Length: 299
Image (cartoon, rainbow, N blue to C red):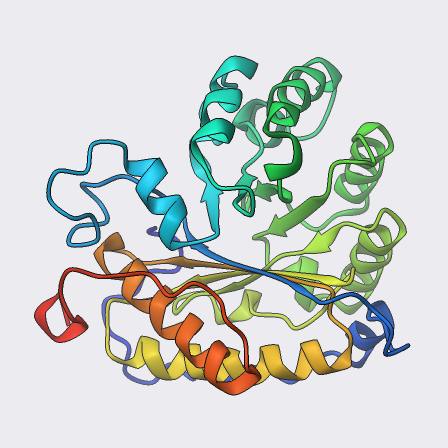
């Protein structure tokens, strides 16, 4: 993942900002909520990118991946709309607890820029629904040219009126004013709240201006982008602290996906995060096996 990549990490403040107080309004404070759902994964199951993860002789990468991690941020669906039969095959290869989090097709987000794309939405959602109970949250990513304007906010609102309400949705915006212009941020958050759409949190070195702490639903969708540097472990440690706070406040769902500029390290970071969550919170999340230690890898 090249978004937010920098050549030098010196001088970057990796401290997580404080939680926006309005985030707590989205959470269940009754103390009677169900056990929270926690998914942790990478953004690919490709053997060439996740080197030293797969044992020798593994031929079906997805089947093995899904026995080690319980979720995948599925970016391949950005480039094409796969046929329903392909989603059925992927569904059948994975355990019952496994979840797919597909990215919205670029025809919707980038070509049509959310306008006049009902046909694409219908075709895309019909296909991904063949994942059935293994469909997690679909996510949409809008690039920096989708600026924080009243016109684009209205376009978002129109889009959300025909997005199927039974399919969970999360949104990521990359123009800084969506989060840092008070008026636009307030209107944007209110819109997402009204449709129960999750506001994606992206933590990457080169775009600290986009690192917000504003939830718009009771689900947190976090995209952690490491820098293939030992500091990634300290950064993940901060997220363990933050997740503990959110879960104690009533968060119903945590979806945490690890990216790296060189994806080799993604499983190492995922494993570290899972182990830390298990230890801190008394959980029993599956800990992935690795063929080598982090000290033998790019670090």
